[in-house]
Structures are given as structure tokens and as C-alpha cells.
Image 1 (cartoon, rainbow, N blue to C red):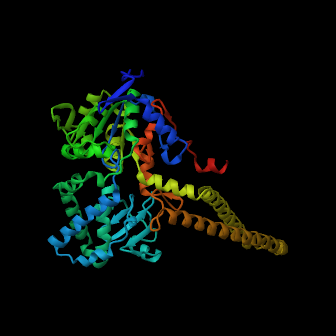
Image 2 (image 1 turned 90 degrees about the horizontal axis):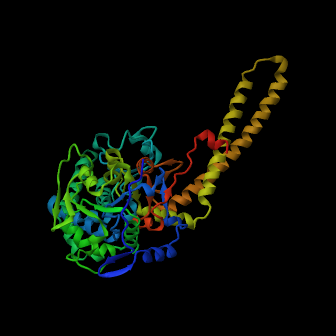
Image 3 (image 1 turned 120 degrees about the vertical axis):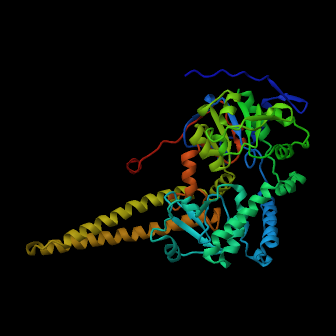
Length: 500
């Protein structure tokens, strides 16, 4: 298959009336943040030849627009609490029971029938559970979720809600404060009530009015976003913004999000994109069979569009399926749906990734020690089973003529088993100590976003399945040439690892 030719941009790009070499910001950024810094790296699940990508699309919220999450969450939570007190009659004293902000992280699962917040591995096993501020012990977990601590699926009858959006934190914090003083039979209703008012402040624009009144208080501009967009344009990529936000919100927020001084009427930033599509209504945008909405031009600019569907957008940018890379932060709306429906290549932006990588840097060698100890533990466990089984076989031998020999062999097996058991206990203790140290450093309640024990979390499994690539911030694309080959690691089966 031949590669589509690209029309190169001029050597200089004009932006806000200034002409500067397109490469100036790129070189500056690369000098300050070498790609060897793992916190700025892009990680690859499925190999991707960037030179074959004709168009790159971006979500807006938490992708190009980096929010001051503490301020945003505080405002949203205050507004929902006001609604609950005024409209539902809740006593404001419950505010004292709201956990600290770091109690809720992306990737957790809410059991809205039991009022619990859960950490679940890739197979649906519950590894950590909280009811309010109380951490359930193993006995309590098994009473609720069976001996295997297993939940059927996060979407089972709508009972399990995955926290896959950065906007979800306030409602989970409020739910965690009210669930302990709510009968289990009413927990589902409680969740729906909180969700109703959370949706309401987004739907009636009351939250957005607060934000757009002083947008710079709610944003932490990434200075590398503009160099990244210019870098991609110079490399021949078509660029588009695809967001569910309304046009009035996008135009009010874009300049502050990019660190530019202009107000809502300054639309110079549109020149950074080939097309801007607002009110996309993802994930429905990717389902052409259900979504026949046409793209509508707004503000008298053919580049600024509303609504539409994936087929129309692909026709505009002149690229389809695997020739398009979409960069977003929402595991379901941005990645899973686009991957299943359109076969677009995907990049997930995970702000928490930078924090975890920084913590690993502060604990040098811990991850490697944990991996090595786990290998030794597995091998020693196998050795214990070996001597136990052999001891059992010898114990069943009923041969009077060889009684002394059998007893000697049993004694030898027992001694070797005792030695292996001591070693196994040592490795288990070492493993738990290392795991606890790393987990507490990342998050004292939940540990890593991506792993629980030796297994991936449910979120980590989705990341592995649906994100071709992932990184801590969208602007990390600045640090890679537009013909870069993002190469995935070599996959190993367990028997291959054992033979290394």
C-alpha cells in the first residue's frame, strides 16, 4: 500500500501575527525535556509507524486542556453539595465525612448497591474495598463478594460503575461520605441522586459558567502544546480537535488552556488545526449507524464545525481507520469506542502516569527487586510442592524390607522441604514489604493505578487492550519525530520467561 503524499507547510508558521521558525519551540522543548526522561516518554502496546499516520485528532478536556484538578473538583463538589442540601434536605454535617481528595483515583469501581469503592484486578477479583473511610478486611470482602472476592463484571446490571473520567472524583467522594449512613437498600438511589445533580451542573452550564468566569484559575497550561501542534503540522499531519464541549465553552477556554493572552473573541488558535469539531457527543460520534447528524459550520468559518459523525470527519481530513491517531484521556469515550467502531489508532493521556513514574524514580531499583523476588518466590513455591508430593509418595510405600531406606529418604525430603519453606517465607515477606512500600508511596489507600499485586488492574487491562500508545501528557509527542516507529515490547509466554 502506497503512502499518501502530504503537502508540506511553509518553513515558517504565522501565529498571532508573529513569524517564527517552526522548529524553534521544538528544539527548545527537546533540550529541556530529553526523551530519555521516562516521565515524558510515550509507551507502546501495539507497534505504530507514525509516518503512516495522516491525521492526528485531540480531545480537549484533560488532553490539550490541563486542568487545575484540585480547584475544579472543589468547585464541582461544592455545587453538588449545595444541591443535595437545598433540594434533597441533607444535613450539611455530612461534609465532615468526605474523604481527602486522594482517596478517589481513576480506575476504581463503585458498587452502588453495597455503597463500596473497590479496586479490581483484570479478572474481576476485588483486592481492596472501602465502605466510607473503613477498609474492609478479607473476611468482610468475602462475605460480600464470595470466597474468590470476585465481581462478575463492572457493568453487571448497572451495579458496578467504573471511574474512568477525571470529572468523576467529586461524586465518588460525596457517595463515600453518605453511603455509611445509608441503608444498603437505598445506596443505589443515593448514587442516582448524586449522579443526577452532578450531570445537572454540567448540563445546565452552571459549572461551566463558574469556570469561564475565571478560566485561568482552573487551568495549568502546558507550554509544550503549541510547539507540539506546530511540529505535527510541519511533519505533514492533518490536525483536528474533537470535543464534546460546546463552542462557547471551547472558545472561552482555548486561549487560557494554551497559555495565550487572548479572550473568547480571539480565534487565532484555530489556525493550529485543520478542523475544530465541537458538541461531538462521543461515544455516539463513532457509531455511524446510530448517528446520522450532519456536520454544521458555525461562526462563519468552514474549519469550525458542530456535531457530525466519524464518516464525515474522515472525509474532511482525507484519512480513515488506521491512518488516524486519536489522543484522549477517557478510556471509554475516547479509546474503547473509537477503537471498536473505527479502528483508529489510539493514544491515552494519563496524568497519573507521570506521578507514578516520579515515585518509582524516588525508589530506585524497587521495581526490579520486586520482580526478582517474585520470580524466586514462584520457583521456591514450586520446590515446596515438589518435596511435599515426594514425601507423600514415600509415606505410602509399604515395603518392610526397605523400611530403613524409606525413612531415610523421607527425612531427607522433610529437611529439604523445611529449607524451602523457610526460603519461601523469606521471599513472601520481602515481596510484601516491597509491594507495600511502593503502593503506599503511590497512594496510601489504593496503590498503583495499573497494578494490584502481580496482576493488572481492570483499568490496566483496558489500557493494554485498547490503547495503542499511552503517555502522561499529549505534548510528549513533541519529543518524537513525525516518522518515529513506536515499537511494542517483545511478548513472552510464562514458559519463555522461565527459560530466560
